[in-house]
Amino acid sequence: AQSVTQLDSQVPVFEEAPVELRCNYSSSVSVYLFWYVQYPNQGLQLLLKYLSGSTLVKGINGFEAEFNKSQTSFHLRKPSVHISDTAEYFCAVRGPKAGGTSYGKLTFGQGTILTVHP
Amino acid sequence: KAGVTQTPRYLIKTRGQQVTLSCSPISGHRSVSWYQQTPGQGLQFLFEYFSETQRNKGNFPGRFSGRQFSNSRSEMNVSTLELGDSALYLCASSPGQPPSYGYTFGSGTRLTVV
Image 1 (cartoon, helix red, strand yellow):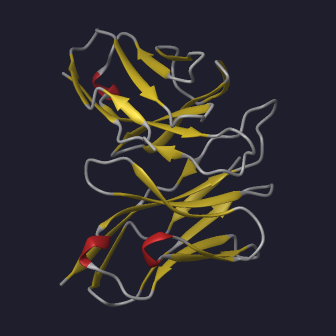
Image 2 (tube, one colour):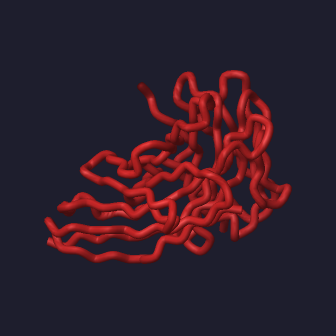
Image 3 (cartoon, rainbow over the protein chains, first blue to last red):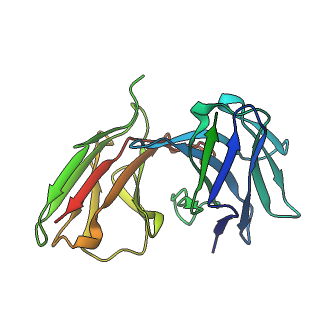
């Protein structure tokens, strides 16, 4: 079974400061990892994904994440945040095919609310 | 390119009623998944459909059901609504091949059960 733990439920930060949102996962098999962002009253928008290859993944809006297999982590970072980055961020893991032609469900963390203060 | 379309955006129902939610995936996408989002339980997987067949199912009671049509559009149905079914229901589509593609989510349907 897979699980995802987002270590901080809320992260306040000042504008133009760097930020790191932490995510640890648990899985007995190789995984695909994702970060999504959710703005109020909206669905989830994909920020970035790790499938294989380079452990440093660059996404949209200046975000990047580093896959660390030994620490089973996939932390999200941004060197300088903007007010518009205020949102809830979700880390998710998907295992390989669950069987047959199923592509496996996404297991989400509980979310981290990032609040950027002026 | 149109995104994932979910209708309706908002819905208010009474306990005991049933409800049907609709999801139109991105053109060409063959895989559709449904998730329930609540403040207490977070995002939980409901079902996954591919080529009109349910490929995976989450741990929800039988009151929750779904289907997918030949044009990949999907519906989910909840019968005998309970107050606890109040949630944001999100649909996600994926090309389906290969499995490495990420999912694209719709804006969701906000269901309120009173």
